[in-house]
Length: 308
Length: 303
Image (tube, rainbow over all chains, first blue to last red; front, side, top):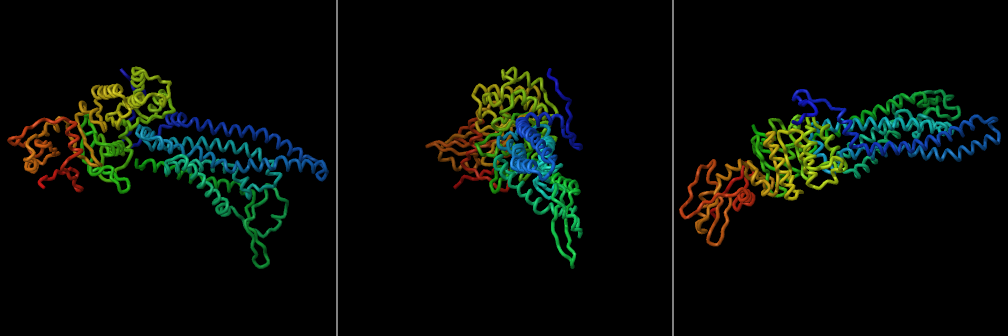
């Protein structure tokens, strides 16, 4: 006689059964392990590069900053060498780093649902006892968490790699997009939102390649919107008449001057000091997180009401 | 109890109605054949029954619950057309996957059946033959211990031998576990001997549905002189009229709701086969469907 491997837990009409996370963990891993292993491998390969190059950069920068007297020819030579050898490389890596969230999102998000729809396997997946709503919630949540953690870890390594270059070029941690977007928790938040955009568009468009292209477009639009419009309006700016704040040499801790105006004979500045870096990070990551959750909820809703 | 009950069920895609005004009830314990040509609305009806799509009009109740209730999937197993399985997964992985996606799953039964079928667990399902893929999908579906098994054109990709195996498995499940089955096919021959309930769809509309035995008992093929065909047709409201040179064949519903009709003098009555009956309803000579009612109405043929 055959034996049921698990006791039947009938879904009560009144209390819906919870999402069986442990089972869905296996399902998600089995079905998306190729993607996850691929993503981890690529990030790991880049990480090895960042580690090797980073040691080199740190070594050169330590030598440069330790060089005395500062105005000597020897120090000038070190300065030129650092500028020629590491700044272009660092800058290129930084540009790629700014695009990494959307690349991760494009290659992970759309396939989750669009592949099921393209191959017809959704007819299998969505008629199993667990139900398609739980299936979608579990898959998207688990993948989102893993991808966000990977992105966060990767960005920490990049930050370490980029510190000397940021210092050398005196890029402000609040004003420079290339720095702010890749530091703290912002990079992870952007990666999460890119994944959510991809997943939602995959369900909406139902085909992987067009959904990938649409993900890129939507992401870049959102990125520009936040950079050019929203970020200046985060409630962290300060108004001042103290000109001394902006007189010193540029450093990563330089403030971000948003605008200046004159009232009578007094000059006013509106600026974001570097000390507001973390509030800004939390504000931006906060709305990105809310947006990502909303997109995932919208995706679940689309799956639920989908007309086959 | 009825395993499936639809009431004025309709589904439209834009302006096209894939299924319209379908009211039908399938009793428990039957092998119900859903027949009709390609594009008749069979898959639409099945997708509605398993909750994959939502009705545009009307309702569909499965096992006493709304087809969209999440709990209903607990007791329904669906085998979609072309047996979709993940082609990159091994048979063993499909087994684990299905086990993890269901609250109840008879792992031992599934494994034993696959062993009986000689299907290697380590092989990728994409590398199996079409017949084996269908068998894997059926095994997984039955291991869920469903009360209702919904099969959408499962035989299409199978050779005759595999068809026989498939049917044998389905019949065994019905006999052993009391599973009810809704089975669609565009080739009635597959189901003629086993279906005890028939639903005929044509062009998105329900043409006729009922117990096979009752339907066969109610219908007769009348053969007689062609000259009298029109007069008789006006009287008997035949489903289908066929004329040869001197003879006419009228497929008539002699019994049923309208009462038993006597065979007119000079005419011979023959029993009809299921295939003949279904084809008559699919290709009626004198049929007009009413857009208001769910039932097809037969019109007078006196012209």
